[in-house]
Image 1 (cartoon, rainbow, N blue to C red):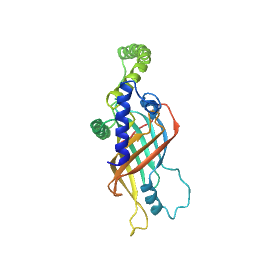
Image 2: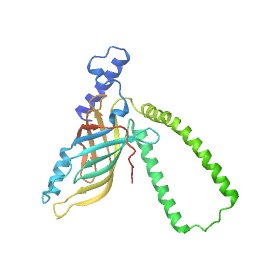
Image 3: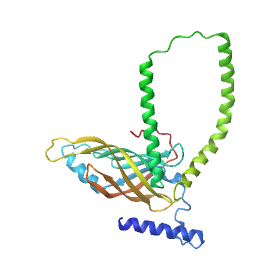
Image 4: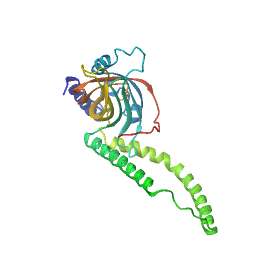
Length: 257
């Protein structure tokens, strides 16, 4: 583990003890208590190792492109992890899952992989079944449909009242399954672009890897971390970021595989 990681762990443990004893100093109160909502937003990212790879794969490309970034969209449906996108242009474009513990991270990854596999199987089944036979609707069925529509309207009003409660539950669930402090394990899954000396053009492959982030404070304005990638021979290489803009939770489509 790098020195900065050890320092972050030690500092965080000291802050937690200080807060519990109400003797925390000014630094321990930075940003107030941690709220996962503060992690939402877009971050400018710096990764020296990615800059080196990008330089070797884009010498002939003089056009300008967007800079490296990480976008944290929202919580997972069960509220146990954060979902987002990591972009290191010309090197890595990946979906990311961030959690407060490695165990939860592994559980969430398994859930996403299983759900997407089930969706693929369902699509194949629909194609094999062919078009559904035509069916003439009877008067009794029409009346039943009308009654069902009225029930749905009543249910919608009840769901609106419950939606706020569900949102609070998701955020509370995240805190329950994390250290309630801004440090996260993350898994990325996406396209990696690499270039060998004997190749005239870069190659792209689908891969996955892991990393770790420690935010500078509960306000989540910046972070330091590491990221690994087998094909690029990255083993805990440096990754850092600064928040460009804060956002509220966004219902962005998230695809893992």
